[in-house]
Length: 418
Image (cartoon, rainbow, N blue to C red; front, side, top):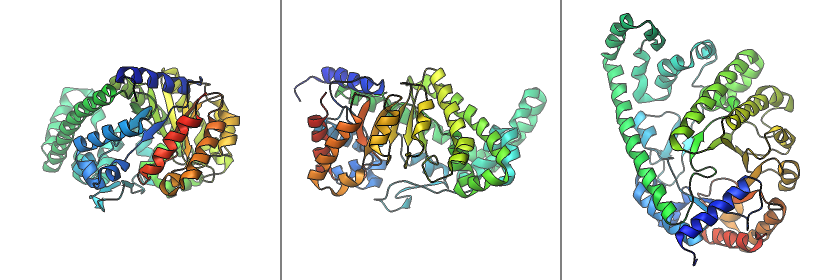
């Protein structure tokens, strides 16, 4: 491309923001989240990509320049080091519990038990520090020896007890691991900032959409993903619905506060919210209206009121639930969709939120190329109508064929002009 990086940066930033804010840009913007696909492009294993951030950055720069999307991201902060350091029982990574060429996996379980609800509702921080973290991280088992930290409000008399607890060898070992993690993360943040500057210097905007800002969970998913698990949460809807609803309210406030603080520190305004249990088929509409939607809608409104833009990933299929999205603040959220019917999506929600995703990675894995072009044209015509659309794959691009990705990107430029 003939434009200077500075010109490309301004044009791409405007193109993306026009789409996110429901305006019509000069053409449909393209976002590529390469992920582990960079390993295939570089002829290395997933584990090598994960363990060598400089190599990962060089590959991201090389292939971002080749495909020339409007936004390009790689692994980002999604690497194994902290999980390995803490002895994380909830995740497996390439080379750490998985083969070197397998993507990261989450190991779901009931890490919060049914009898723990009262402790969580009474004091989530105390529950997290003294119960949950020792259960989920092998190297943090010593935190179970902490006293209840809320006692520190009484002042000097309680510090003697805290000092005694800190001398416990298991607790001391866990605190040392946390100190090593903090050192690694501080160095990693500096490294990521330099990497971001390198991408900007090449003409690729950051801090837009799903790249920089904060992370939050729908309150139902908060309680399900890392605490109760799918089995536990669906039993809770029948056996202890009032406690579940009370816990979701706690979760909403925790997520809002954390997201606001994270965005304050990063300077971002987008809050990524993956929706893991909201898809059609996970629960009835009656259950959705009681346990999922009101809490998610409340979270979204709180974030919008704080001047942030929720970036929701509507995983799975949302055909039966699309009309609920009309209750969201118009033009204040963006949605990445996986397998929802694109015609219904544009018709029902296209004037409420910007849309990205929807393009099936299966086509980008096996083709054929002509079908990729045909499907790209269809997406541009339906989802791109009137603006408010960002072309992106509907899920992970890890196993995509680079030749088919090139066909897709080129076809978007051809058919996505307004």
